Length: 122
Image (cartoon, rainbow, N blue to C red; front, side, top):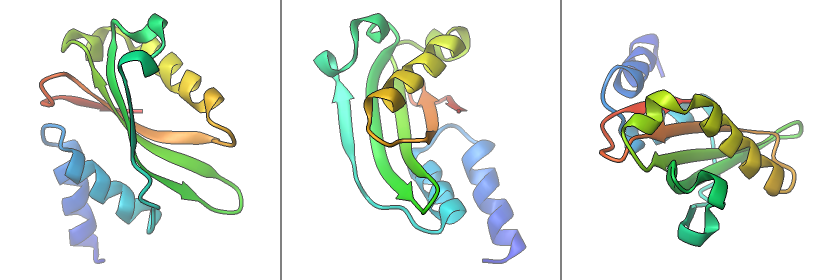
């Protein structure tokens, strides 16, 4: 990939409305390889403490090397206002997820509002 292609991927991902495909493409280029390992938490799988904020947690893949184990997550929030007002809650939710998943060191995560028009990268 040349410099212009890399710049375009970054612009497509971070300067436009949130797009899961653009985020996935960015992560695949950043890490060079990810294992497709999708699953979804919603409904009763979301802890009660987060249900008013979090609608869906979706793992789109994972990455591992000798030092790290990383999950790539997309989190859909219940309300558009949750994106702006609840940063601590969003970080705590990701910490809950990482603590509950054996061996995960950290995640590349994006929270998107319910309309899928705005995103925040963690």
